[in-house]
Image (cartoon, rainbow, N blue to C red; front, side):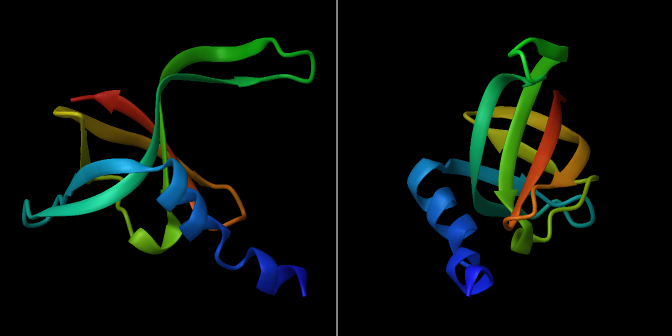
Length: 100
């Protein structure tokens, strides 16, 4: 029951909180419109609310987007390369970004 209820959470979250971006594929340089949740300066926090690590641009995208770490993301006219990815378990993929 819970699985069915959470199945479309990533779609709703992306639609409500997402912003338009362009995915530039690594293999053919085609530009595809996507929606991402973008934080220009993000850092993980510990249980006490203290930042862990350096702040960096981070985005979340639906896992079903099939993004590749060699792709580029263009958000608000700025190109970002994908440094690493991590699924959140709810259908979103966290992308740690670096300016290209």
